[in-house]
Length: 317
Ligand code: NAD
Image: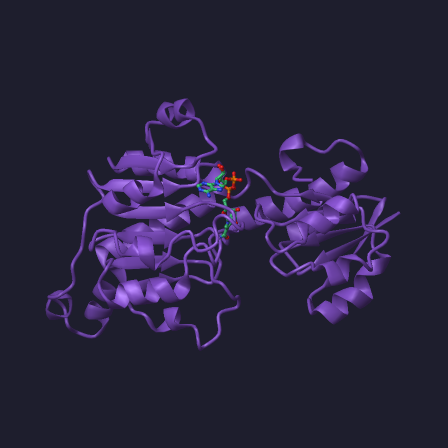
């Protein structure tokens, strides 16, 4: 019998797969403090993980742990070098959330360019036309779109941008020109050129040493004043203080931010007071459909791992 820790609960449709399986028992752990995980995790053979951190301090106590199944695709919350050394496998729910995140990025682009919040507020406050007198709105049609990172989510964005008749450019040094052109976009060799010309920018890269602060004051300064930037990737890919300054000084028009350097966001984060930003609480995957797909895939990955039939696309390590 394999013992599995569910670190932070998820949709019950996933857990029901364990209920039907005689070889697995599970325990839900919602207190994700380092101390609690150090105490609780050592007895488990595998675990699932949402956004809480699995540090080296925790992992070195987990002598039985063979597999971590991420409910998601990013894995910057795990000490990857350590689990590689210890031969602990890391699995992700690949291909279950790309459409959902791309839809969220599009929703943010549309909301900001159409002034959705201001228009709604104007009607509710009885300022029917007066309330939107100074609100600028923009079309997506024929605008220059820059997608940074052309993996699962970046590729899902492209169809949507093409259907709005946008002129799509892609910056991803690791993806071949033919693949990008095959999807109807142009590959850029230089990020700075892309940022200088873009009306809309959407980030779809992992958080790594190379992508930390990828968007900072130096390149925000070079962007168009009407530019809108969307981050549904990870907090830290855009430098938050630099973004706040760029918006306050009208270097760019607006930003849609789903992910933050520190989550949950605390009241001292300047972004939450900035009216030029549309915020969401790391909820780009929270549609009813996606919650179910991710929950089922997270559990299926654990079962498939122990039954030696795991799909290669789910394996990071
Ligand atoms: P993916 O691995 O399929 O694609 C990432 C792409 O980024 C790859 O093509 C890679 O070549 C590219 N890349 C890496 N470094 C780069 C750099 N310096 N410059 C430009 N491109 C670079 O991942 P994905 O499934 O598309 O997800 C992307 C990221 O989105 C994840 O790593 C995760 O952090 C984030 N994410 C967030 C949410 C959310 O809820 N907001 C949900 C899912 C994923």
